[in-house]
Image (cartoon, helix red, strand yellow):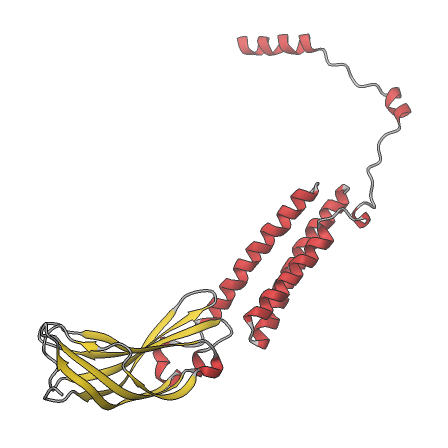
Length: 173
Length: 95
């Protein structure tokens, strides 16, 4: 502490150490906000398929579906002071003889703010549902909502919620 | 900066930084704004730097009291005989 440089170095080093402690404390508190066991009470969501826009077989033999659906979301309670954004995507999950679990993202959205975390919208699939083969006729498909809570500091929290299921038609359109 | 001043500066720095960190966390958490916490803490760090890093007169209130030159002349430094010291060492090695 005898010279200007030493004092400056000491102040900055200790300040950085405390900054790390602050960030650690902030992300530690986040762990109490959305416990994984109670996700359904933290997120209110619904998604229903309204219409099958297109259902066809591609030239290479893979089934392709385009859907329209209603989505309503309330993810306000996921937001804490340490939340930067919430990435949310709707995935179609189904089982085929070849794969025990097929998981295809149909629509996604980035929620930047708590005020925008509650909405209702009618969307078409952003990304087409394409199967690895031709197994989709009459297939039961689950709609699962996945979300990633991205904090300003700390661990990213991921979780999912099963919303609904529907059966694809028996015939191509 | 004298000895007392250095000690005072270090203690002051630690206390001020810890207090500003705790205060920033409290304020940020209550308002619910991470940005406020960061700004409050940055303010605390700047304030601490301004107070404890420059050599303020506040840190120079206890100057060292050197002996008066006349006092030093009255008690001359004992003269070390280097030749005798080195022969002693050699003797110790031979043992």
